[in-house]
Image 1 (spheres, one colour):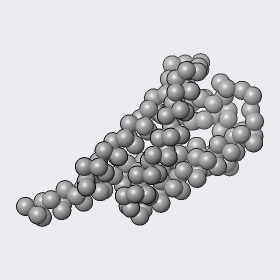
Image 2: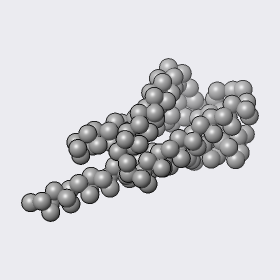
Image 3: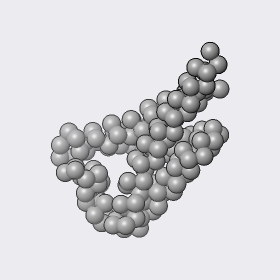
Image 4: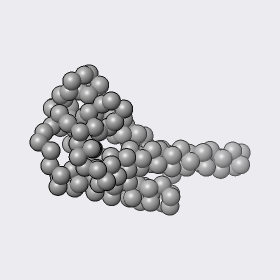
Length: 145
């Protein structure tokens, strides 16, 4: 019985880590892109034929680089939380992510615009998925206790 419980705890820990790593990738991708090539980021983010940021002109290199720095900083924080697997660090990293992501989602939901439905609602869906994943990880951490 105890062996099964330890196995379940390890599996839950692995799922938490993978979830945090997924969030890490979701903020590292725009962060690195915006830092390395801010104009390209503005014109083409998120890529794959979609253009979510271009519909909010004018282009401002300073603002795009600041946003890229912020996203990349969050990637470092979330990545560190995933690597250390320290519960409090994970929890506070996720809470910080939510403090940013919820107002970000609200703004995009209120200002949904774009040439296609994907350009219009893609940011809203992507942000909502990150929020749902963060909340699911927080619930899993609470149950893991």
